[in-house]
Length: 367
Image (tube, rainbow, N blue to C red; front, side):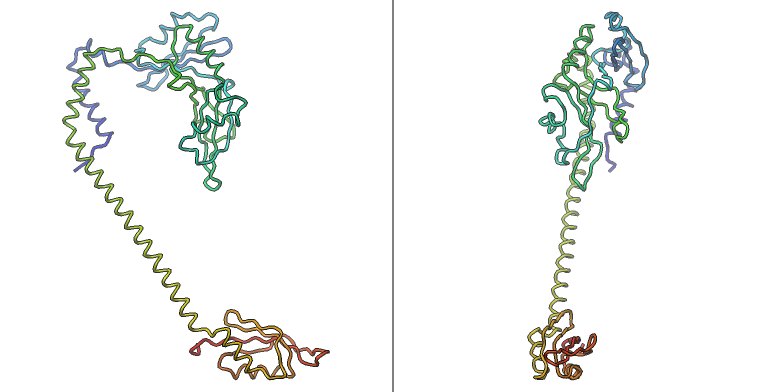
């Protein structure tokens, strides 16, 4: 069965409501088909600029400027509300870049999930302000997995400055929904241009009563939605069942993968252990080598150094006839390829030849 996603449901809803809309009287249709808008206010030293955007078209439709000392509150209110439903219109106060302190900081990656909350307790380390004196917002620029650090852009604005601007805007009879910076162009900081800090949280933003509406229209919409829910409920239940089965299959695949990887590791461990046992069985012990050398060396020869490593023995000492030792070693079943390294020299005190010999130790079984 073909599964339904959010895009399919949205397409169906748009088509269905579009077909029903032609049967609704124009006057009643206007009750709940309102035009959503967005108004941005920007203040400089002497000027207020108002930009109006159509939310549905996502485009600027009008821009007008006022002198700050001569703002006509009635004209401003008409400009903001023109063609928009106030309950569906957002008003944003935009701050200029010189009103906002910006700084790139480094923090541990462990803070990423609750970054803003974590930094709220430590703002006095990065700014000259106390946490209760500022509004702030953050944006992750990059992540370094080797050093486990995040490069974060911190944007800060003093609360007293924001409150002063809001008080002035409220004096014109305008309620602001959020405060943000116009842009973050910072040279040499990749990703900063994508960040538009927001400083007025939902808790501090003014509460506008958007619940006032036409109850009959709401009831009609709720009825329609309930009808759609009844039609779609069987499809949604089957989709939930399918999602549950997919999750179970995915979990089983994950467990099977773990079992296969564990089996590979155990096989490798056993193979390594068998190799070590085999190697040990094919090598003479150090005691056997030392015993054989003791039996081979004549009484007129003695060792000052003996080393056995990686199947080779190295001996240094003195003897009446060092060449005779080569023949002794070659006659043994434990050693082969015996040879003298370097030149033989005579010790002035003992009158014996100094020698440095090497020989390979034969593996058990003659290998």
